[in-house]
Image 1 (cartoon, rainbow, N blue to C red):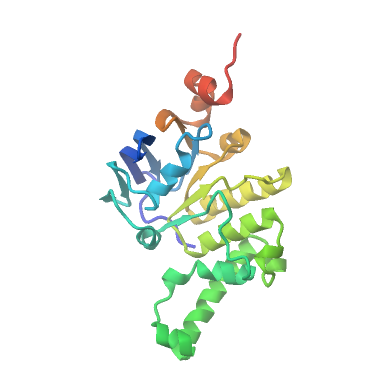
Image 2: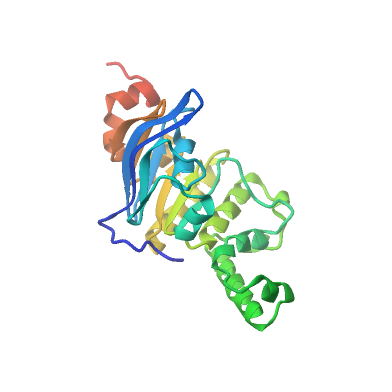
Length: 264
């Protein structure tokens, strides 16, 4: 699995004055922050704060009316999702988006689509070069399966899997694309304590062993404080705070808006 191309001291992503509107609804308003190469960056905030909208802007699903996104030194305002994927951004979703009739292995193999270079005819006829290429991609998918410890369900249709394992398969599909930056939208939502501990371990392993930059939205503040290097706090589409977990935890604006007001 590939790591980022930029050095650890550089920003792999810069969000500059991004504003996003849907009709009369202001989803994001002049939001700016950066993501350093190789870090785990959390985005938190109350429901409706604009967190998922921010991820959708980063990977090109939404196009902001103002501001820009710079990824690996390339600045743009409008980019399609397949272009973001080709440049090294992979994504999981708040609501699981798997092919439910397909097996775990086949779902993870779909993450290799952008890596396949042989033309459609060779793939359809399954001729020599296409066969060799598919074997190489299947071998990589098996590595992802081993990494996520889901060997026992590799041939199981994902519709038969419990929720926590489906989340792990979706992570595997994203990892199969060998991303430089991984966007995770509430990866622990709906999980029990053991499943959350496993997911945290996999996220930290992806970040530590492969150098993959991780940007995640998460409501479990214990998880955020434990695994994040830095935290962005959004509130009503605006940047409320930005800093280390300890700095954010002590910020009175965050306490009032998100964590619950504390009085002496």
